[in-house]
Image (cartoon, rainbow, N blue to C red):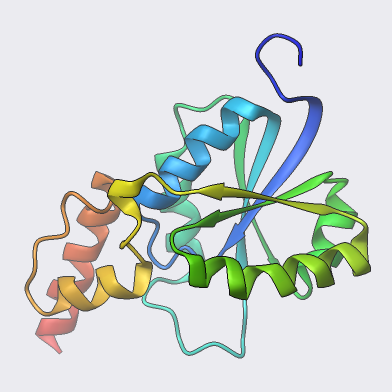
Length: 171
C-alpha cells in the first residue's frame, strides 16, 4: 500500500442500471474512488429489462452531476457483456456494492463468470448500513406512491424524479 491507496494505477468499473442513482450508489462511488486511481461508473443498457424510468441520457446526466466532486470518476455506458466492456476499457477490477447477504449470493456467480470471460476480478464493497435497505426499484415505488425519498437519493435525482412525476400526472 502506498499513499493510502490499495491499488496504484488501477482502473475500476462500477456497473449498474442506476435507475435512479441512489445515495447508496454514491456511497459506493465515493469509497471506491478513494481506493482506486480511476473509477468508471458504467451504466448498463440492457434491452431485455423492462423499460427504465429514466432514459439513458437522463441517467448519464444525473450521474455526471452527482460525481462532479470526484476528480477520478467518469460516467460511461455500454451494451452487451460486462466482461467485454471491462476488457475493452482495460479495467483491472469490477466493483459491486452489496447491501445484504442475498446480494452476495446473486453477485458471486456473475463475478465468477466475468472472471472466466475477462480475467477481471470483482471487488465487493459492503454498503453503509444506513443504505442497506435502499434499492432503485424500492425508491421508485415509494416515490410514486407519495413517500418521501429525499434522504435516499441525491438532490439532482430527486429533482428529476419530481419532474417525471409531474409529467406523468399530466398524461
